[in-house]
Image 1 (cartoon, one colour):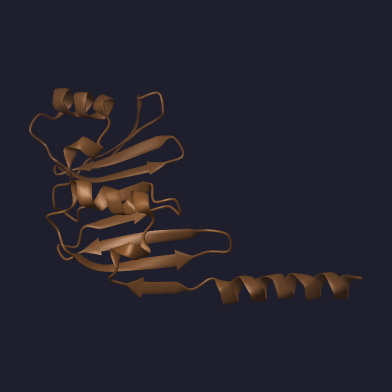
Image 2 (cartoon, rainbow, N blue to C red; image 1 turned 120 degrees about the horizontal axis):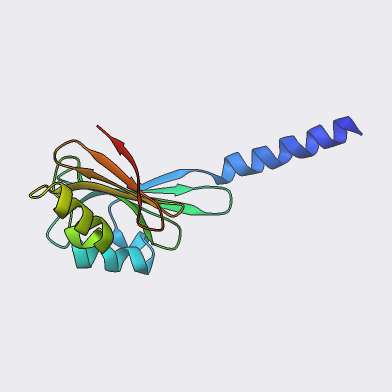
Length: 145
């Protein structure tokens, strides 16, 4: 019985490994419609360097890298998860109002270099080197320098 279970697990892993592969492209039409719209709306002035399509067992993820090194990550539906300007300023409109209000009050004049959304938390990186993490209630829960 153990041999059958081990064989089945090995087959599942083999199938998963054969299906999971990354594809590199420059064609934005490889992205979901929501990701294409996002890029047109917020990054139409930038040129795509490459797009990495990561195929996982039951889903895909997309990583778009611009020629200025800005990196945008999307989930399988085309919803953005992270925008990393790599020291370039990212569009402030991507930052939720409650974070912008907090940052304007505490750190006037700073700009945003990165934003990441993950499981109800939002993390922003400012040009002064601080990384601020907020929970889904809009409360500051962490500051990293």
